[in-house]
Length: 295
Image (cartoon, rainbow, N blue to C red; front, side):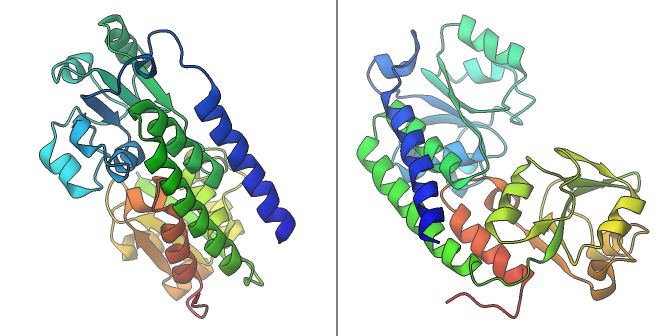
């Protein structure tokens, strides 16, 4: 256990050092005074900005920025993270765009750059070190390094508690993340996805690990995988009745279907990989294995 903690901490330290030490590229906002009007693209990015005390600088957000509620409730909405428009972003007169990996389309972000607005890319790795790195980058750019250090320490403590709980698991539950049902086909979260990363944190086995990314999984493959629990988002494309999910041909013949085991959680909380992720993973762990109640 000590060795694992040491490895994790070394990775975090290295990533933080990189985030703080690498000089910003020419034209980035870090060269000048801290930005005053930020377009925040990505739910975790917005959440971190508010946790750092920089919420008053957020000029606009995307539709995934649902936490804290006042972000999307009081700021202009520039659209869905992956279907943005340059006009919508530029209309709020930003002096910086903070964009999580995957925001776009790329040509839209290029138009924003050509209009003279710097864009800072925020890495999106579904790991504890990835979350700490996210905080480090954002704290540096907005000039909130002290607050960032405190938040990173809080997140590290949360993951340490989670690791202790995870060590008590004797047999990982076989879990399947279902993103949506499309024309009867089950869209699942395979390896490399945020769902896969969350299962790892919660001490569960992802039965869709043979699939890469979010892709359909055949009924035969799902039956062969025999998941014990299905996990879904409460809202979004996967927001369908439990009976429709577990009663379908693919899952009815699995332990999850026979026992009616479906866990639903808020999408950003579950998959956002922001400051609340240690708590979300611990909650998922408890939901997947009801007999175990972490102290």
